[in-house]
Image 1 (cartoon, rainbow, N blue to C red):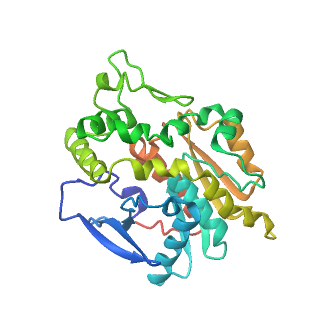
Image 2: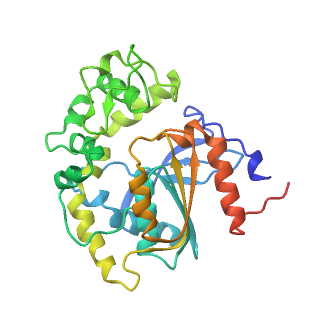
Length: 307
């Protein structure tokens, strides 16, 4: 089947035939994961079941090591790694830590941030990049997000906003500088990205463990610095050497031209492609994103394009 003919519709969250919850032991750690394999051909997606006893599980190096171990256990001699959002950051770190294993790299929406030689706490980073101010809310010591979403009603209001729901005035109750305006969340309508059935499923699944897991990613600044600092001492100096496709979502207000230009200085084989979509480009413009992927993979002789 040619890639352009592949069905890009979402998997039905209620279809138990195509979606099951399983567990796996990877690198000595137990993971819960969703196994999705419809007839058109998906493979396994590993999703951590949100440990709360340590931030270590959320550090990039920890997750990269587990992903590498998973690949090796499957008999992979190499891998093409792709990611979106936090997955983008993990994907680039995968390529940094295992440059001989990761042959090609793709990230969507979030660009590569190279290792830094000096540690800067999140507060200092935000002074230089105010558009990251929302991360103080997400990673707050008092658990602002977690407290709001303790009950299912709060979780539903939060997820409606997180997936693009608007107020009656047509406004998004979020700013990059400050995060979510919780006083406005009760009036947020249903997001276009999720139908009622999907909303119920997301509320149920996020409520199982709460938001501490997702928010913990914003509490790992120091752990990630300490883990990645040694990369600068290597011969490559923490540069990305493998062919790298960055799919930029042009309506994502967090990714500026300056960030993309900074990334260019630290990547040897970079291709940047643009799609007219916001942060959730994979959902909003799946055909366009797939076409970008197809063209890039074909240009690298990585894809059979026959009928």
